Length: 220
Image (cartoon, rainbow, N blue to C red; front, top):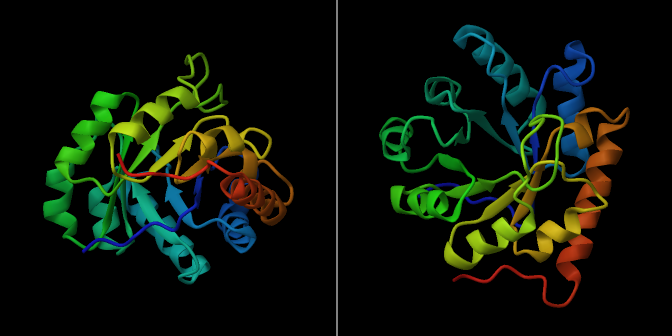
Protein backbone atom coordinates (compact mmCIF):
# COMPACT_ATOMS: atom_id res chain seq x y z
CA UNK A 1 0.00 0.00 0.00
CA UNK A 2 1.39 3.39 -1.00
CA UNK A 3 2.26 6.14 1.42
CA UNK A 4 -0.39 8.78 2.05
CA UNK A 5 0.06 12.51 1.52
CA UNK A 6 -0.50 14.81 4.49
CA UNK A 7 -3.72 16.79 4.19
CA UNK A 8 -3.38 19.65 3.57
CA UNK A 9 -0.07 19.17 1.82
CA UNK A 10 2.42 21.95 1.14
CA UNK A 11 4.73 20.85 -1.67
CA UNK A 12 8.00 22.55 -2.56
CA UNK A 13 9.29 21.98 -6.09
CA UNK A 14 13.02 22.59 -6.43
CA UNK A 15 14.71 24.81 -9.01
CA UNK A 16 18.44 25.47 -8.67
CA UNK A 17 18.08 28.60 -10.81
CA UNK A 18 16.08 30.31 -8.06
CA UNK A 19 18.42 31.81 -5.48
CA UNK A 20 21.92 30.57 -4.70
CA UNK A 21 22.43 27.08 -6.09
CA UNK A 22 25.06 26.34 -3.45
CA UNK A 23 22.50 26.75 -0.66
CA UNK A 24 19.58 24.88 -2.27
CA UNK A 25 19.67 21.91 0.11
CA UNK A 26 19.88 24.15 3.16
CA UNK A 27 17.02 26.36 1.94
CA UNK A 28 14.82 23.36 1.26
CA UNK A 29 15.55 22.02 4.75
CA UNK A 30 14.64 25.41 6.24
CA UNK A 31 11.38 25.40 4.28
CA UNK A 32 10.54 21.99 5.74
CA UNK A 33 11.01 23.45 9.21
CA UNK A 34 8.42 26.07 8.24
CA UNK A 35 5.80 23.55 7.18
CA UNK A 36 6.65 21.94 3.82
CA UNK A 37 5.33 18.37 3.77
CA UNK A 38 6.50 17.17 0.36
CA UNK A 39 9.62 18.03 -1.64
CA UNK A 40 9.67 17.35 -5.37
CA UNK A 41 13.22 17.26 -6.73
CA UNK A 42 12.78 18.74 -10.20
CA UNK A 43 16.13 19.42 -11.90
CA UNK A 44 15.59 18.24 -15.46
CA UNK A 45 19.01 19.29 -16.74
CA UNK A 46 21.02 17.12 -14.34
CA UNK A 47 22.46 13.79 -15.46
CA UNK A 48 21.46 10.68 -13.54
CA UNK A 49 24.56 10.55 -11.32
CA UNK A 50 24.28 14.25 -10.48
CA UNK A 51 20.60 13.92 -9.68
CA UNK A 52 21.18 10.91 -7.47
CA UNK A 53 23.91 12.74 -5.57
CA UNK A 54 21.64 15.74 -4.99
CA UNK A 55 18.80 13.41 -4.01
CA UNK A 56 20.97 11.80 -1.36
CA UNK A 57 21.96 15.17 0.06
CA UNK A 58 18.34 16.27 0.19
CA UNK A 59 17.16 13.05 1.80
CA UNK A 60 19.80 13.32 4.50
CA UNK A 61 18.98 17.00 5.13
CA UNK A 62 15.25 16.30 5.40
CA UNK A 63 15.81 13.54 7.92
CA UNK A 64 12.37 12.06 7.35
CA UNK A 65 10.58 15.32 8.26
CA UNK A 66 9.06 15.57 4.76
CA UNK A 67 8.38 13.21 1.88
CA UNK A 68 10.79 13.31 -1.06
CA UNK A 69 9.75 12.48 -4.64
CA UNK A 70 11.88 12.70 -7.78
CA UNK A 71 10.54 14.32 -10.92
CA UNK A 72 10.11 11.77 -13.76
CA UNK A 73 13.38 9.86 -13.12
CA UNK A 74 11.94 6.56 -11.93
CA UNK A 75 15.42 5.00 -11.90
CA UNK A 76 16.78 7.65 -9.53
CA UNK A 77 13.69 7.45 -7.31
CA UNK A 78 14.17 3.68 -7.01
CA UNK A 79 17.92 3.84 -6.49
CA UNK A 80 17.81 6.41 -3.68
CA UNK A 81 15.33 5.09 -2.44
CA UNK A 82 12.96 8.06 -2.24
CA UNK A 83 9.30 8.16 -1.27
CA UNK A 84 8.19 8.15 -4.89
CA UNK A 85 8.12 9.90 -8.23
CA UNK A 86 6.24 12.76 -9.90
CA UNK A 87 5.40 12.04 -13.53
CA UNK A 88 4.61 14.63 -16.17
CA UNK A 89 1.86 13.95 -18.69
CA UNK A 90 4.45 12.88 -21.27
CA UNK A 91 6.55 10.81 -18.86
CA UNK A 92 6.54 7.02 -18.61
CA UNK A 93 3.06 5.60 -17.93
CA UNK A 94 2.02 5.14 -14.33
CA UNK A 95 1.73 1.33 -14.62
CA UNK A 96 5.32 1.11 -15.88
CA UNK A 97 6.56 3.23 -12.99
CA UNK A 98 4.55 1.09 -10.57
CA UNK A 99 6.20 -2.09 -11.83
CA UNK A 100 9.59 -0.58 -11.03
CA UNK A 101 8.75 1.16 -7.75
CA UNK A 102 6.34 -1.34 -6.26
CA UNK A 103 3.08 -0.72 -4.39
CA UNK A 104 4.43 1.28 -1.45
CA UNK A 105 6.05 4.26 -3.17
CA UNK A 106 4.03 7.31 -4.18
CA UNK A 107 3.34 8.05 -7.83
CA UNK A 108 2.03 11.50 -8.68
CA UNK A 109 0.82 12.57 -12.10
CA UNK A 110 0.80 16.11 -13.50
CA UNK A 111 -2.45 16.84 -15.33
CA UNK A 112 -3.91 19.78 -17.24
CA UNK A 113 -7.40 18.51 -17.99
CA UNK A 114 -10.21 16.47 -16.50
CA UNK A 115 -9.57 13.72 -19.06
CA UNK A 116 -5.92 13.60 -18.05
CA UNK A 117 -6.93 13.34 -14.41
CA UNK A 118 -9.34 10.51 -15.09
CA UNK A 119 -6.68 8.64 -17.02
CA UNK A 120 -4.27 9.05 -14.10
CA UNK A 121 -6.88 7.61 -11.75
CA UNK A 122 -7.48 4.64 -14.05
CA UNK A 123 -3.73 4.06 -14.34
CA UNK A 124 -3.28 3.85 -10.58
CA UNK A 125 -1.65 7.17 -9.65
CA UNK A 126 -1.70 8.12 -5.96
CA UNK A 127 -2.15 11.87 -6.35
CA UNK A 128 -2.53 14.59 -8.97
CA UNK A 129 -0.70 17.86 -9.51
CA UNK A 130 -3.05 20.15 -11.42
CA UNK A 131 -1.87 23.21 -13.30
CA UNK A 132 -1.45 25.87 -14.18
CA UNK A 133 -3.47 27.81 -11.58
CA UNK A 134 -2.07 31.31 -12.09
CA UNK A 135 0.58 32.93 -14.27
CA UNK A 136 4.03 31.86 -13.07
CA UNK A 137 7.72 32.40 -13.76
CA UNK A 138 8.30 28.70 -14.44
CA UNK A 139 5.68 28.64 -17.25
CA UNK A 140 6.03 31.97 -19.05
CA UNK A 141 3.46 32.65 -21.73
CA UNK A 142 1.25 29.76 -20.66
CA UNK A 143 -2.42 30.63 -20.23
CA UNK A 144 -3.37 29.60 -16.68
CA UNK A 145 -6.36 27.30 -16.25
CA UNK A 146 -7.27 28.80 -12.88
CA UNK A 147 -8.93 27.24 -9.84
CA UNK A 148 -11.92 26.33 -12.04
CA UNK A 149 -9.98 23.44 -13.59
CA UNK A 150 -8.97 22.16 -10.18
CA UNK A 151 -12.58 22.30 -8.98
CA UNK A 152 -13.64 20.25 -12.02
CA UNK A 153 -10.91 17.68 -11.39
CA UNK A 154 -11.79 17.38 -7.71
CA UNK A 155 -15.48 16.92 -8.48
CA UNK A 156 -14.75 14.05 -10.88
CA UNK A 157 -11.76 12.29 -9.35
CA UNK A 158 -11.18 10.69 -5.98
CA UNK A 159 -7.42 11.27 -5.78
CA UNK A 160 -5.82 14.07 -3.74
CA UNK A 161 -5.26 17.05 -6.03
CA UNK A 162 -2.50 19.61 -5.53
CA UNK A 163 -2.68 22.94 -7.35
CA UNK A 164 0.47 24.40 -8.91
CA UNK A 165 1.43 27.59 -10.73
CA UNK A 166 1.82 31.10 -9.35
CA UNK A 167 0.40 30.23 -5.93
CA UNK A 168 1.15 32.55 -3.02
CA UNK A 169 -0.05 33.04 0.53
CA UNK A 170 -2.40 35.71 -0.80
CA UNK A 171 -4.17 33.57 -3.40
CA UNK A 172 -3.87 30.02 -2.04
CA UNK A 173 -7.30 30.35 -0.42
CA UNK A 174 -8.77 30.18 -3.93
CA UNK A 175 -7.05 26.84 -4.52
CA UNK A 176 -8.16 25.41 -1.20
CA UNK A 177 -11.71 26.65 -1.78
CA UNK A 178 -11.73 24.73 -5.06
CA UNK A 179 -11.23 21.54 -3.07
CA UNK A 180 -7.47 21.07 -3.31
CA UNK A 181 -5.64 18.78 -0.94
CA UNK A 182 -2.69 21.13 -1.09
CA UNK A 183 -0.56 23.51 -3.11
CA UNK A 184 2.85 23.30 -4.78
CA UNK A 185 5.20 26.25 -5.08
CA UNK A 186 8.68 27.09 -6.31
CA UNK A 187 9.49 30.80 -6.31
CA UNK A 188 7.17 31.66 -3.44
CA UNK A 189 9.51 29.85 -1.08
CA UNK A 190 12.89 29.44 -2.77
CA UNK A 191 13.17 33.11 -3.82
CA UNK A 192 12.41 34.31 -0.32
CA UNK A 193 15.42 35.19 1.88
CA UNK A 194 13.62 33.38 4.71
CA UNK A 195 12.38 30.03 3.30
CA UNK A 196 11.23 28.87 6.72
CA UNK A 197 9.10 31.97 7.22
CA UNK A 198 7.73 31.87 3.68
CA UNK A 199 6.71 28.24 4.07
CA UNK A 200 5.13 28.97 7.43
CA UNK A 201 3.10 31.82 5.99
CA UNK A 202 1.85 29.65 3.14
CA UNK A 203 1.00 26.77 5.45
CA UNK A 204 -0.94 29.02 7.80
CA UNK A 205 -2.84 30.53 4.87
CA UNK A 206 -3.74 27.01 3.71
CA UNK A 207 -4.91 26.00 7.16
CA UNK A 208 -6.89 29.20 7.57
CA UNK A 209 -8.63 28.58 4.25
CA UNK A 210 -9.37 24.98 5.25
CA UNK A 211 -10.97 26.18 8.50
CA UNK A 212 -13.48 28.35 6.62
CA UNK A 213 -16.97 26.83 6.34
CA UNK A 214 -17.49 24.96 3.10
CA UNK A 215 -13.78 24.53 2.31
CA UNK A 216 -13.45 20.77 2.43
CA UNK A 217 -12.47 18.13 -0.07
CA UNK A 218 -15.28 15.67 -0.71
CA UNK A 219 -14.99 12.45 -2.68
CA UNK A 220 -16.95 12.48 -5.95
